Length: 223
Image (cartoon, rainbow, N blue to C red; front, side):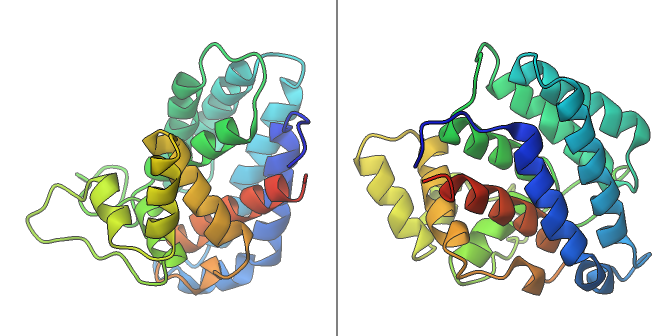
């Protein structure tokens, strides 16, 4: 992989292209309004434009500005979750003057981890996040929420998934922390193209998986 610094606006531009190409398939998964793909195209365009506007500033500033823009101008209820995820990613990356590939993977995890697979913003959320379902897709089996459960721990979740679980534990044994290990496992499964996120069961999982895959493939393509 190249040592060049990832450009966030370019990475989200790649995600926007992927979402635009698959918007109709994601719309078809949306049994409520039939427009989740359309909404995500507009939301990704908003994120990309916001990051471009803050291109010369610190990555954290761009992420917080994108979060604010999405919170006030985003389309569909899911936009509020993505706004929250961008803000949480900024918290995770505070103090960094530039980003590397691990930082971008942390960003992807923060965003998708903030989005519940199903439900509405005004409801109490239960079940798994889009991140957990995307990891499930990458591992070759779906992740089902456990009844009466507060959710699976990330280590427990990944330990049940192959090949992602194996890649996770190999990364952990080599000294990577949990976030880095998750990122490395996702990189291998998603960037390799063995997974088609649009075949997910919910529009949020499909859209989130597509965002993760397109960004990770763009990172892998630098090398």
